[in-house]
Image (cartoon, rainbow, N blue to C red; front, side, top):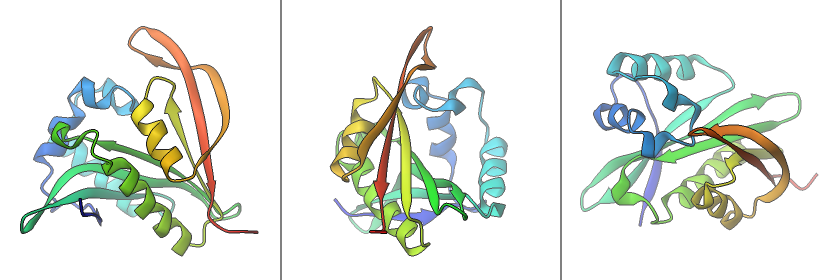
Length: 171
């Protein structure tokens, strides 16, 4: 399956994005699931990120016949210019594309972007129960760096947050 990452902007078709963000089954591992989202809140978020010098938001697009479908998002954020590090976060919103290796491919592509930006290392945190995300990072040669015990809330229970890292440069 061919995917590409494309920077989102206020002209992007975000109808599906709004729907995904209001679906708890899709956002349960994201901090953003706690509030109601509208077209305006999503556009405001996109504009905010696009003005940032340390965060980059990309739509994940999958090629289907002669067009690309927006199926999720990936962000390279919290870029620290001193330490040359950045954090990756993502979700595949379109349920038809779950369990199809989309997240893993998007991680690979955003790591290439991070490397071109001169980053030394990228990292990501995953809920302990978010096995698909853990597999996607491990498939991209990320290593487990640590576990924060009972760090996050999922539903009404606390669970561990597992941190993964990947060195992009040799030194």
